[in-house]
Length: 289
Image (cartoon, rainbow, N blue to C red; front, side, top):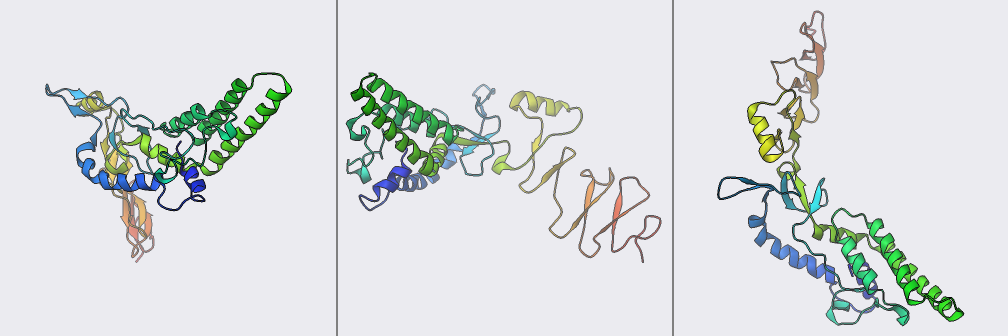
């Protein structure tokens, strides 16, 4: 089972590196080797010159990161499942601190495997998977003890109690395991490299923009990291402490300028929508002397 929280329970039994910590260490060691050959845009050129579209990502597919705005399912990913405890038992000893069949009342293995799959399904919220886990265990208890007699009723009540304990454990302690499952199951789909802003032009598209839209699903262009999109143009924002002031086109395509701290006041000029930087505004659109 996806078992960061099980690792916490297991630490009461043994000491050492948890299964998830070992996986993270291995992932870090291998990431550099595969990064260069794997990172790339979501489309590639066929030998004949056509474009192969990535149906899962219309931008650039990269490794998942915590601040990813557009997680998408990883290609050909198969969620790992291993029942109700850490894979291989406690630190590979085969000792399972969280049994598949608690007190031998019912076999929760199918529910635990489904929980693993849920945590490793890209964009599936943790609470959705945890609720299904609880429901699945309840269903197993009902199938295992379907009778109406006192004996079946007592065992069914105890089975449901254990199911609730398992659900409480994952819903309380499963956040790290869910995040790790999402990191394994998702890629990040950036419209632009490094998550930079996408700037879509205003007004009718040019022939080049129309061709880009048909070929790649995008008519805009990627701004540099840190730039902002203003009126369909990638613009460099004002530095901290500088004042942003309106500037009429065509003097500025971005339609704003930046006044430095020495002249921080935006004073309107005779041109509508235009201004100049002054220490203090004077009459008739000029700076005060």
